[in-house]
Amino acid sequence: MTQTPVQSWLFPTSEGLYCEPGQFFIDPRTSVDRAVITHGHSDHARANSRAVLGTAETIAVMKARYGEAAGGSFQALAYGETLTIDGVSLRLVPAGHILGSAQVVLEWAGKRAVISGDYKREADPTCAGFELVTCDVFVTEATFGLPVFHHEPAEKEARRLLASLNMMPERTHLLGAYSLGKAQRMIAVLRELGYERPIYLHGAMVSLCTLYQQLGVSLGTLIPVYEAGGDRLAGEIVLAPPSALNDRWSRRLADPLTVFASGWMRVRGRARQRGVELPLVVSDHADWEGLVQTIIESEAEEIWVTHGRDDALVHQIGKLGRRGRALALVGYEDEDE
Image (cartoon, rainbow, N blue to C red):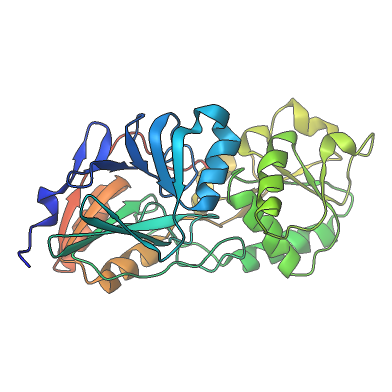
């Protein structure tokens, strides 16, 4: 078979990364005719494309968030199932980022490209673990693409939270976490550590936690704060989106101790700026070591970096003897975990 360089059939456009022979975009930044979606975060899964392909869980998240605007039609593809679109072989493999997250594996004209979306290598009880696929071109993120970023095991950080709760039972432990993925992961890890008490939820957390449970993820007993009556929840864990940690809503709680689970908590200045008393360094993205390890193990000759700290990572890719390219795709966020 004649081999055709990947960059001649897969390339960035103003709408996003485009596969020309298959005529589809991957995580487009605008509505398009055909979209392949890696996962349900809003900077990757946007509404109103005519045809949407993703895992069943990602499609469920999109429908929950966008309703009728989620897309015109949907096609769910199971992990490992192969689909041919206009001659392009496409399959999804787990990315380990959040429930339903997938890497997109494309093969055409004798070459293979892997678009990883957002990913992490650490185990997560709420989603399938990352699977490595060797390829000719590996497309990676670089949200935490600096050597300073090292994420701790989530279990270790959750134990710190439980230790604080035992030491200060008079205070409500208010845990800030991104509402899709991080919140459910922290709940599941606490359950694995044997924490059986109800966990209380800010109203903004309820729908996605319910969806996770409907999709088969066990999270134990969850109670919305508004159903707790006049209880100020001393000695309990309350989950809330980061934006609620220091607003008026939190004042109803008993002397709240502010906790925040995020990869950004590695930077002490960020924790101080947010008034976080107990920073937990937990991320759903690969840290520096995870990024470099994955790039090496992919065996890719060329690595494209979609967003994040692309300059540092591209420099490191060169030191590894590979070709690095910063795509600088706009519209992706450095997750406000």
